[in-house]
Length: 524
Ligand code: G4P
Image 1 (cartoon, rainbow, N blue to C red):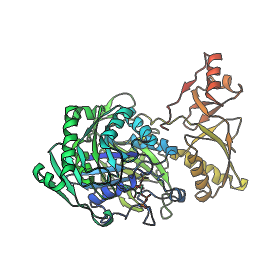
Image 2 (image 1 turned 30 degrees about the vertical axis):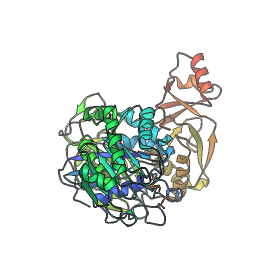
Image 3 (image 1 turned 180 degrees about the vertical axis):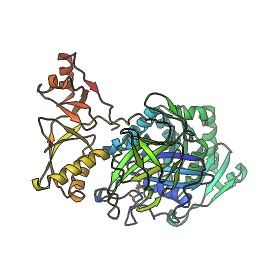
Image 4 (image 1 turned 135 degrees about the vertical axis):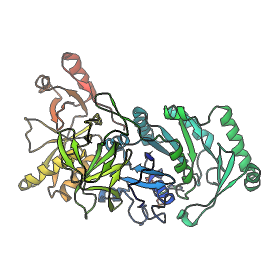
């Protein structure tokens, strides 16, 4: 790993994609290019190879998906790149939303044979909502796929951003020799390495030599390039940053084709960390005193380190390990003696971190998702919106003798944001209601309660599907109406649960004086 304490400019991004589009493979290829690892396969988890950087739970391995979120930091050219991992499964959209709060740009990874898939679209919408500029990468060009112009049309139609290809494939999908670099007009020719395990060598050829090397494929690529140019599909930095266009690159993550171009474009086009909007609507410039916000709390990342990590994105100033910061929510001092970065199972102490970097704070039991920490001039960042839950279940310890462990476990998982925990006097504390955006969250709770907190639980599904925010004052008026129940979330919010949207509307119509506000919609 490169030293983390240099002052090189930062680029902080996440990859958004549908499961199987090649996110793990691309992460690995990026790390390979940055020389974090010497051979691809070292961090990829499939086919009996070692676990991916973010593989850590059995449930995750057995399903081949990535639930946890870690940040991968590496030096590339004169920059430091932070790749914040996003959970791959739809049911983890809450986590993904939080991760996207911590990045300055996103790479939208599209499978060349499948085009835009549902999960990609939903994640894209979160980016659009947050104003995060998106670079599109069409992956798996080494395999048969759709026509490139068709893919471009589809992207424009579906996400309403104008695609502005930076490169254009030379050779149809499945016959990938290289790309036409649309800004220089040159041919970047790739050479395969055995199994794609090493960086793919490239040659940069002038058009005349390209014609000799690639023949008709070069001519076809040039024609497409002209067509795109006449349609105004050329990169424009202002429209990219304003979120009206998306630069497009063609790649094969597996063969390491196009990966160097992606890194170069991230450095050149993705925005540097900028001033962050504060809770009161002001702006905290990057060069002011240190501040950061927590976007992820995670425990039990592996058996060797059974502790709790709060991941914070540095927004301003310089973080130095050991500094005493203030926890904005409580006003209490917080010592950052144990600050780490996580790369797979390896941890390294973070001595210094700059805006855009992610710091893992160990055993930060007071820190919750959305919390601000700062030094010097006080600041507080707005909370990260949580999604409207759609699944509800009561949780009970199967062994009543382990109630203490049960309580501790539920509290921990609540603070990590694994599920939302709702309570009411009526129901008491023995059987809190768990609320989730996706059903798989329940599965994670069950596995972790049993294996980590030694308190196996029984979940009983409730037939509510809709939640609305209400107030403490209105709660008694809603409680007891048919198909309605009011519970308090651990952050103090009062949620009215309804069996269905129709009932929620009926109650709203019959009681127009009561507060019933929709919660942010989920990205699913
Ligand atoms: P994910 O994290 O987005 O879920 O996807 P992942 O990287 O695990 O890739 C999903 C499958 O697609 C893997 O195949 C992977 O090898 C393959 N893949 C990824 N990028 C490319 C590419 O550029 N070209 C081709 N041809 N395939 C690609 P698998 O069979 O599930 O696993 P494995 O046995 O290959 O490891």
